Length: 239
Length: 387
Image (cartoon, rainbow over all chains, first blue to last red; front, side, top):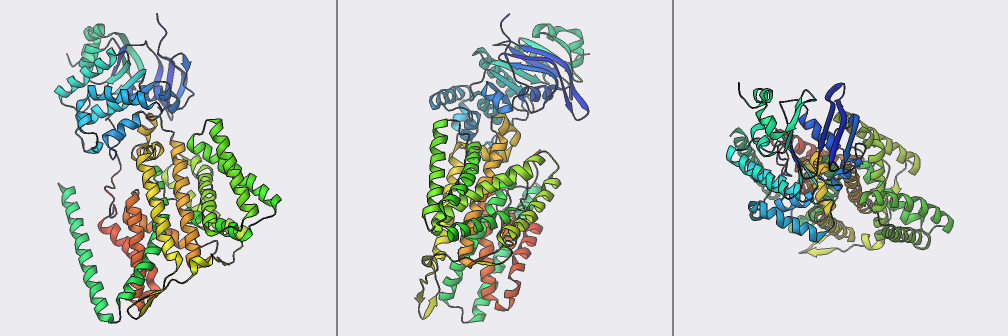
């Protein structure tokens, strides 16, 4: 077994007195694509926020690239190689596409590397290159999703965390977005994607975790989950 | 649908109000009869100066609001501190070298600590160079120079900027994440505290602020047969303001930290996800806002010739009004609102001399009208909170 890239050991997290995560164990290996499934309020977003340090770990430990990071601030984790595509995209609406991409490279100082990554982002999303000077808030939902993904790639991350990339997009666009996620993953970047749309997520992921009221209730290879009886009934809309 | 209807209605209202104002002013000028071109020029110069000062202070309110949604009521007192720092720098120098050294170490040390944390100066070489520059510069100014207004202005801006950062660190940072009302009340408390601290430290008396002769030397000129009263300060204030606005605009639109500031104002959580240190950005915002307030404070003192510990109150409230009129959170809005308020104040007094006792009222009447008909301000886009 290779050294894990990200590991959650026995993590619990709280919002005041309410427990949002209960003794969650997860592990991601380099180059994998893992999806995190679950219904509303199952703790998916909290898991992401805990990994990022936006929610503090109550109990348990988080390791990233072999180092314990749960006491570290968010900026440290970003610098160490995490990047986020947040829920609802959340591009900076009153900044141009170019400025949004620059914000993705905020912690970097290597002008040459940034230029290379900008070209890589343009090769994935030619639309962004056409719209460089446009205010991000005036773009369509799909374009904003592309921008949010481009912005995350600009930090040259080891691990990309995606929160509901399919939300609010037309089915055809969802397919495109997931194809690009797969391309990014094939480049060696580990992808951890939170999704409501279990079908499409499992069809391209290597493995999956299923959360329910803050606990991991199922985990395994994506193909197994896709054909798991309980899973199909609960999340894939089959009776 | 309704939103666009509302927007077009408020645009219509603005147009109508503007038209009405122009008609009213024209009618009034015709009525007065003796309102000559020279007076128009005179009023314009006075209004530009006053408006520039309001604009500089208003920027501090609007920037802080944009980042942490706090009306920093102590901002007027920061403005007051700025004028006092310059006052002491100008009247107490050159100092005995021992005292100068002590102040250099205290002031320079704090300035350095604050600058280091603001700009993430991690290279020891750069920090050492900066430290040398700050310590040597401060000591030289304090011990060997009779400080002129330019030196005093720069020193006061630096010291006041640091005071603003300290205010944020002591009064507001511990309340991060607390309800907004708590922060607001703390801001009012900070304002009272600084007023009383000022009375204790600086004395409650009004002090004369004797700027150099060059700023007060009359540069009068005549138009036709009338004299326009003009002094150096009337050139200095708009010029310094324009330079500062230009630099601020460059900083916010071109530099990495400036972009981080805008990003934080738009979505602090996502800015954090990009690796932005939000505490650093907030401190930087207070630093810049306080620098601008100090510049306004020093120039205000030169213009009106006296300072006292409560002097920040009225300009502070007016500048806050200006920021709201322009659209709080918007930088161009603050400048526009400040200038507008300056012009209204001067022209109301000039056109309606009988109403001059009420000149402060007009600013607030305008505020009420704006809040009623265009609550997001003249250039503010929307007031709805992000969802």
